[in-house]
Length: 152
Image (cartoon, rainbow, N blue to C red):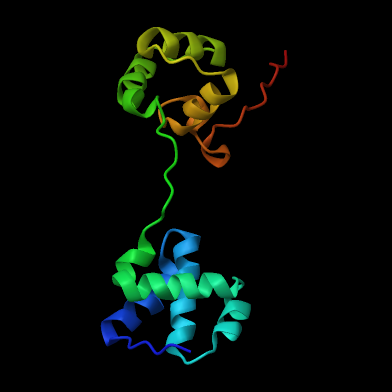
């Protein structure tokens, strides 16, 4: 079993990030380091952190090679959203010309950006925009009221 020396600053960062880091994979890595700093064996760490023994070894190797910064890095990247670069322009357009339907919004997106998306993706994009009616959460939407018929 290898010995690791953790500084007080490292331990404070590990203690905080094992619960508060935005990505769950980094939280898991920090939990492994925390358990190692408490003197657990690799088998016990793997069981407690719900990872394999090999993952424990990989995380510890990465820590030994590059410190905490190496563990905070995530090796994969998602695809860039083609509409993200046009978001502000589309939002401004939709402020002045709210779409009546997803199909109309789809046509505007294709016309202004040249990016063709399906209706499901267009609806999801509109929900993320704060200016469109679909972007408001259910509790903040006004509820329809009953119309009372005038009594004669």
